[in-house]
Amino acid sequence: MKKPDVICIGISGVDVLIRGVDLEEPFETETKLAKSIDLELGGDAANEAVVLANLGVAVELMSGIGNDSSGDFIRHTVAKSGVMTEAMMTIPNGAPSALNVIIIHPDGERSFINCGAPGAGWAPDPKYLKNTKIVSLASLGLPPFTDVQTCLKIAKEAKESGKIVCADVVYTESLSLEMITPALRYIDYIFPNEDEARRLTGFNDLDDIAGAFIKRGVGHVIVKTGKKGCFIKSKELRAVIPAYQCKNVVDTTGAGDNFLAGFICALLEGKPLIACCRYACGVAAVSIQSRGASTGVKSRQQVENAICEMNQI
Image 1 (cartoon, rainbow, N blue to C red):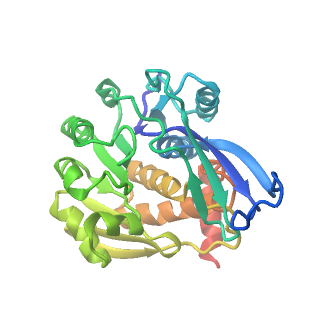
Image 2 (cartoon, rainbow, N blue to C red):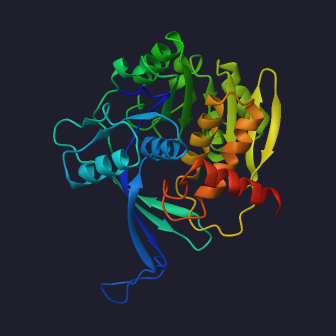
Image 3 (cartoon, helix red, strand yellow):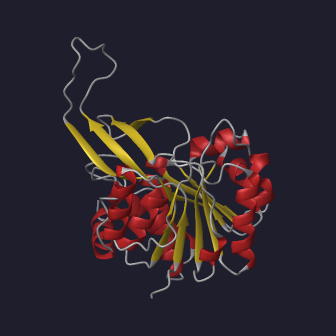
């Protein structure tokens, strides 16, 4: 059996994508028409794993799903993409799979509706960390990384067994920088977006934001700055990487997950940090030109062709 180069740990879910409906105005009748309603795979870890598989990377997904129709959809969709699913597990106590309703606005930005912390109630199994090169903690602050003990246990075990540890991070009311500080010294690359990083650190300047993570032991900080690209900082390097300009932005859902998948793909190839971020920006740019968080990126060749075209804009 083929061994994975990457294991992605975090949420898998179902996204209900709604476009072309005005929710600011009250309902005149019991029904409003939308331009489109789509059912797609969602969740940070699932998105990241599927995009990695589409880029040709051997990847395993560790995630909790419910014993329900949504869970069946998730497992089938992930496996169909070529992602290894042995580490997927059923959430105990009859808990449902994660489900998000996403309102896509005309400019491609989106708003989310969910019921709290979906996909909670399961714990990562460290045995699946043994045969991989990179361990990606899909989002600190979301299940299963909602407490310091889980963050620390998995990050420490992965790092001490010689793995490269990557981590995204989201801001929630229950998450603080102090809470995850014990785990940060075991993380090689962290990828907060600009807004979340400001809330977590209390700083506005990108240098100060990244410095707060570096001070706590993170090796490299990549702050995702949306349409602007990303900001990189480590002890040896500081750089701003501009985003690629897209002619047709359709849906920004999952752009950060695609960015992380692109970065990891380039990292596996031994590319330097700036080149990894440039490739990550290219993957994210491809992703936002299609509906859905993991449907835009089809292959490595597609991304390379798109980057060549965008370089000429």
